[in-house]
Amino acid sequence: MARASARHLLVEDENLCSELKQRIQNGEDFAEIAQEYSLCPSGQNGGDLGEFSQGQMVEEFDQVVFNEAVNVVHGPVKTDFGYHLLEVTSRSN
View 1 (cartoon, rainbow, N blue to C red):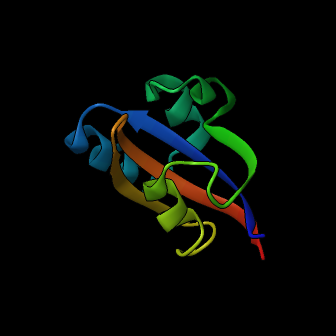
View 2 (view 1 turned 60 degrees about the vertical axis):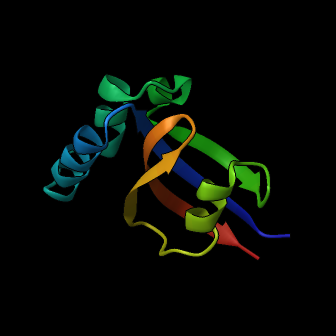
């Protein structure tokens, strides 16, 4: 079964999510931005979600985490919780 490690941040506003993505792409630290802005408790750990299997997260996460490029910030990704930036840090089949 496919497994991956990822980090994310969660905000309520799509525009803010896009702004944060731009800041990260311009060189700001993902973990520091997650600590400051993320509404998810994982934000306190820089957004680290640890390792998980396909199907453990919401479908929108799985689509990105198990199909998109590793070590690239993806998003905004909309879920019922809000808007996320996702970075897959590792993946194995």
